[in-house]
Image 1 (cartoon, rainbow, N blue to C red):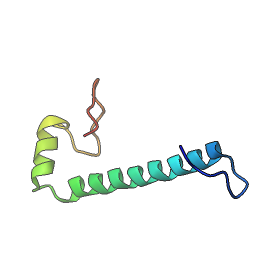
Image 2 (image 1 turned 90 degrees about the vertical axis):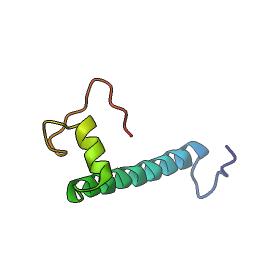
Image 3 (image 1 turned 30 degrees about the horizontal axis):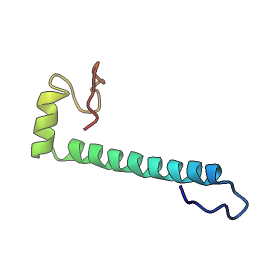
Image 4 (image 1 turned 120 degrees about the horizontal axis):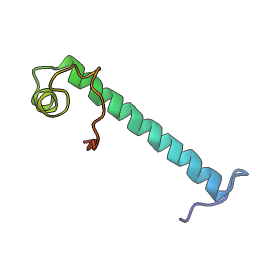
Length: 71
């Protein structure tokens, strides 16, 4: 992958570190998007998700379906 082996770490350790950082960033983005859904209930995104994914419950109490799309 072209990552140099510096600072006493192997390429594998560097890749794991970077992978964890990217995963943390994605987790933060998902939390931010969830907060927008909860606080902006007049938005088109909320209305579409309400009709599609949590029709009979709230966003925070919604369960994953058998085949969630993670969109």
